[in-house]
Length: 152
Image (cartoon, rainbow, N blue to C red; front, top):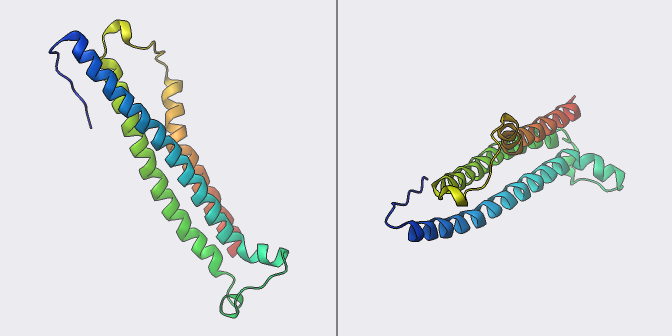
């Protein structure tokens, strides 16, 4: 979603841009918190499902008789949950990235004296991609690998 504010007056235009920036900054913080809260919660839940038979052995508990005969079902469920986690993580990352791009677009619409100083380098762009896509991908690969190890 692109936000464009017409130049009807420099101070009024700047005021509208700053108000929009405040709204998008709040949304940016919310999306970042939500993305990582969901990612880590889903990661830990999937990991617990994969490790459940082993955890129950450690705590000297037993599975219900119907599941006790087929403990290999847990890694399969873990793989399915991993794919759901990955799709969800990528979608949350795209939403976060959309808010970030809109916020940066608003900054570029400000008068020169109000714009923040930016350093144009490829490292910051790569960090944003690592933050949004690579880390969830690594988490996904780790979950699938653990599931496959327990299947073998």
